[in-house]
Length: 214
Image (cartoon, rainbow, N blue to C red; front, side, top):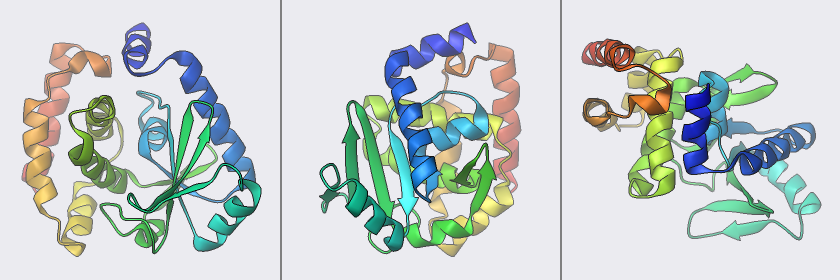
């Protein structure tokens, strides 16, 4: 646990993480949404926590945000999302039929589960979304965090690789499989996962073996 906390501090301070978590709890009380991004990965894997919040909402729920967050809500036409900034916590709101994610935003509600009081995207979908996010920002601090989140999902969540491939095939993005294999081969940062070199090698080989079957 000490090692994991040290890795988290390399990304953001414990104070920022705590404030972000508190904001997420407030959102849960007031709105209906699907949680994606780093906090969703954390809820599934219990690995690294996050600083920013990423949620998907319906058009109806967006109207609630427009009423209650009138002074804070900003539309980002370039990135096709809405944004709220609460002190140092960024809340990114992706809206069905408007936002552009790796998968159609309005389809993600078909691939959800409930955990710890939250509705979140299934691990197969989170993995695909994280792969897409990483490609867009791989040379940044957030890109480094994306890498650890991707490996955390592979090692510490119950991913069904057949479901993962079926989703990729449905949306004609099967190339994600080969990209994931290459990514896994070159990833070396076992310390970020609080694993020994041997534990890391065993998990890595197991996942590569599973990916070869699809």
